[in-house]
Amino acid sequence: MSLHARLRRALADPQLRLATAFGLASVPITVALSWGAVTDERIVAGGTVSAAAYLVVGLLVGYLYYDRPTERRAAGTRAGLAASVGMVVVYLANMVSTLDPSDPRATAFVLVGTPLAIAVGVAITVLVVRAAALVGDRFAAVRSWRAEARDGPTGAREEVPNSRWWLSAVGYAVFLPVTVGFLFGLDPDGFVGALLAVLMWFVAMFTAALALFGVYKDAKEFHEAGSPWIPNVAAYVGVPVAAFVAGHYLAAYNAWEAPVSMLGFLGACWLAAVVYLFDRRRAVAAA
Image 1: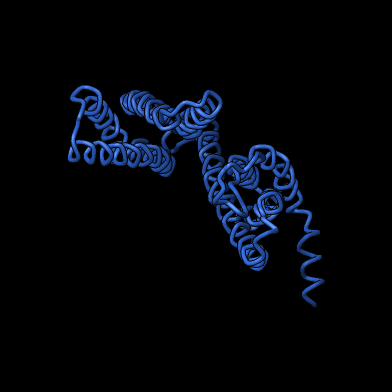
Image 2: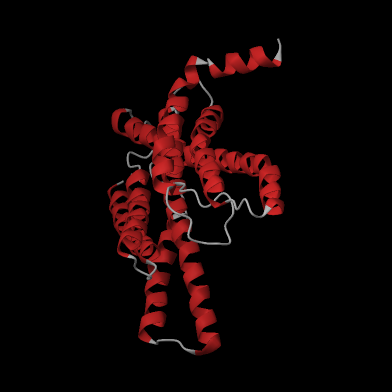
C-alpha cells in the first residue's frame, strides 16, 4: 500500500472522527485566545499561542475514548494534529504582521526557519494534547471504578487497602500553612529570605501536585482492594485546576500583577486535600 493510500485510510478512520472533530473545533478558540497585536519589538515571528483549548480537547478525548476500541494514544495524536491548525494560523499571522521588508536578511532567516518552527509547534501541541488525554483517561477510569464499587458486589476481598498515598495530602495540608505563615507572618527580607521564599513556593507547588496525584493512586488502591468507597478524583483535582484557570483569566482581565492563578490553585488544593482526608477517614472507619 502506498504512502498516499495509507494516509488517506488513516484520515478516513471512523473511529477517530470524534477526536478529529474535537481538534478542529478547538482551532477558532485557539485563534481567538491567542489573537492580538504583537507589542514586543523583539518578536519577528510566531508570538504566543494559548494552550487552554489543547488541554480541554485532550481531557475530552481521553475521557470519551476510555471505553472505545480505538487506542487513546492514537486518538490523542489525531486530536493534537487537528488542533495544531490553530497554532499554525496564529504563527503565520504573527509572522506576516511583524516581518520588516526593509531587513531582507531577517526576513530570509524567518522564512527559512518557519517550516522547522511549525514542525516543532505541531509536535509540542500533540504532546500537550496527549498528556491531557492521559489525565482524561484516568478520570474516566476512576468513574468506571466508582460505578463498579457502587453497583457490583465486593465479595470476600479486602475493603481497606494498605495505602500510604494519603500521606501526600497530609504533607501538603501541613506544609502550605507553614509556607503562608513564613511569607506573610515573618515577612522575609534580604537575599537569603527571598531565596527561601521562592524555594518554599516551588516546594508548595510540587507538594500540591503530589497530593493530587496521591488522591488518584489512593483511589486505584481502593479499587484494587475491592473497597465500596472510591474517592471522586475528578472533583478533588478539578476544583484546584478550575481555580487556577479562573485566577489566570481574572488576573489577565483586570491586569493584576499578583500571582492570582497560583494562589487560587494552592488554596483550592489545600481545601481539596483537607476534605479528602476527612472523607477518607470516614470511609475507612465505616469499613
